Image (cartoon, rainbow, N blue to C red; front, side):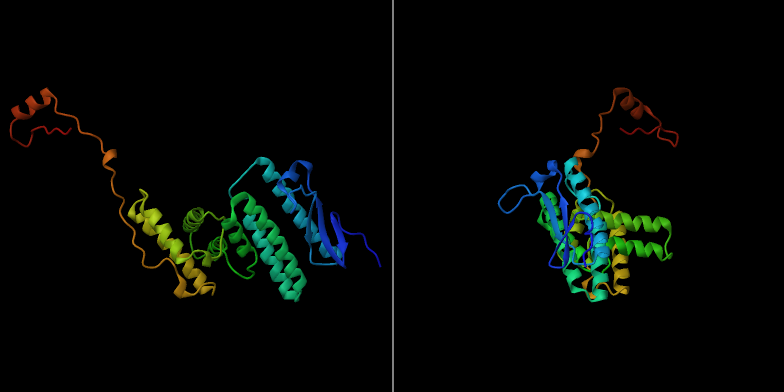
Length: 277
């Protein structure tokens, strides 16, 4: 029995593969092992079923269309949608595990590798590794997902939820990742974050508030059995009061002659005028 393969796919060995043409202007960004331009994105979809293949092909086509647009803009840094793509991969892996479909699990991981390679070209190896870990860890909460679940619980006000989000986003910005699993925040990275804060002009109370917010997020993750209490990296940190830069102090001017004359000629009483420079 034959069937019509979904768009931009081909069948090989009873399995479907994405076979997406690369636009001509994008081909210099995609090289083969012989350093020639690739003409197609080829990815295993991990299924021979045309309905499931069509769904996966549409998902991957949408991803690569976004990637082509990003490359045309010449953008670097965090790619739009990376966090969403990682969540999609985790969800697909979790669904495949639930079905006991190891082939689909491997296929999704292959897709995640392709995406990570694109991130490595744009952002470097550390960002690519962080993405791949995020994308292939089903059933785990990321930091942003933890904040979202805390907000959805209804136990905190909108203002508190907004502050928690800002505190986590500040941490993620310092780590240079759009989102991450809690174990990405090692003790060494937490220490570096606090030391970087201590070098800023932020007030001591603001620094303490940020650390308190991160401790709250980690406590939530502990209750969700996402992290071990022994691995909370936000305990026993010291924050400092910012030192005033002597160069920023305004230089006092000298006394003017009329001020000196009036000062020494003024009566010593409660009604005397007092001058400051």
